[in-house]
Image 1 (cartoon, rainbow, N blue to C red):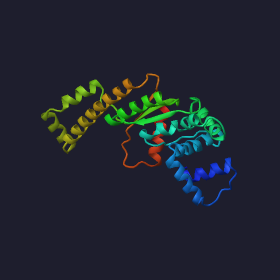
Image 2 (cartoon, rainbow, N blue to C red):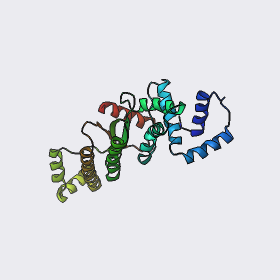
Image 3 (spheres, rainbow, N blue to C red):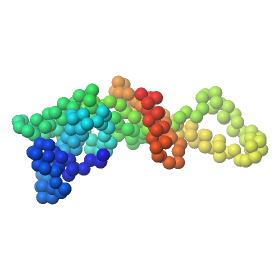
Image 4 (cartoon, helix red, strand yellow):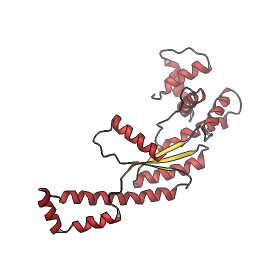
Length: 242
């Protein structure tokens, strides 16, 4: 489902204040927007509260959230704690307390960061992991590294590849296959270079994270489109890694 703050507000009012679900809450929604803009954390509470409610009521076996960008996720996760510290008694505190119980339980909740073997995503991943540890009580369950290029050659195969790259042998191969083989060799060299450049970023990522945090790799899919078939491939690859 897509999260919608107005729909979540309507559901919250129906559950907690017994206000019937209306097609439009109009003035109430405008009032909510005013309060949300004046009091930081209110919209975040509504979002986190909706997700935590689905867990609490066991409406699903597993709740997977495609969350906000890395720069905003910490603020979202810490919103219930902020409200909890501001309000000492009453219904609002009770509401945020059970959210915290779910969020802070590593058996129920974990953040999975999706990264890529590139300089900026790796730097952002390390920064987010540090912030999650320093500013929240939410468990970092794993880091998934997407689009990891496979190693093209073993050491022995690479030596053979280099031996074949002499002008004389390239001419012989071109004659044998009836077409220019130079682009194939250039593409292979590019693939090897990209793999090794990205391997350095993977090493930086591993060094920058707690060794206890699992790193899960998803290989680069060489596909023209990403539909159901690609989704199945990713699921199978993740299953193998896990």
